[in-house]
Image 1: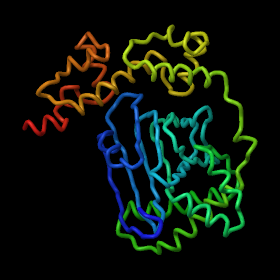
Image 2: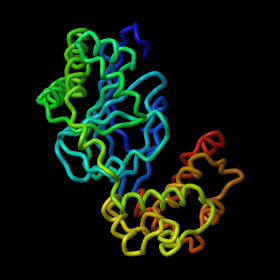
Image 3: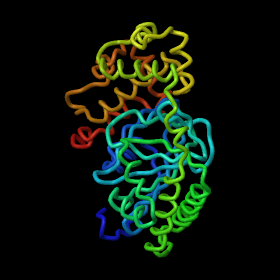
Length: 325
């Protein structure tokens, strides 16, 4: 999508496969890790509206999410409805939350089951240009941050959500619904900019809590040592806190214990490797062993509980298996 060429493309799709969803949104360089048990069900709507892309997503599972906007673009997100089961860094999101996606890869947050979100993706230059025209030149300073959580108490945010809800509902019901791209783009941009200009800066610079700082140390340690087995006690030492504090941090942020998180992390890694493997030279047992699973029947049980299918079925979905067939 360019700054000047309107695009009428509409994507309205349901996914039962997390990897297919991630691949479809390749420009965003998404990274999702499933944290709770069960099959995937994702609803996605993306519709180009002039020089803007509006979106709606609904997710049935708990995920750790990392996102990057397409090059040169800014993605803004707000919840469809209030919930306390969504975290951005060390903060809970609510109906006053407006997110600006970061430009660098980092942990964005954790979303709970039945997470519903609206998004606006637009070029940064267009946002700044329109903001200056509306008398808000300070918006360019806000966008210098790599990623921000704005607490917006202005009615503009609620009107922005209402506009997005209306347009997305129309498109979900009938993807061919005609509407004026320019009029919708102008209205959404103005509401977005007004919302950004009225955020509460005091709430935006709250110092990180002890538990979140400890959690970040633990996750950074795991990410930097992916090939070694981890224990909860070892993780608490890396995080410089007690095991109990780390337990509270994981339960509060991820909704699972550190032990369960480490298990799901390895299971997600197995799944990604199986989907990229060549079945002619790779077996499920080899991949499982690489990630520290030695009891194959327990591994298969844990895998199926988390993803809803067997690891052998995942391997059969790899490009290598289809080339062989």
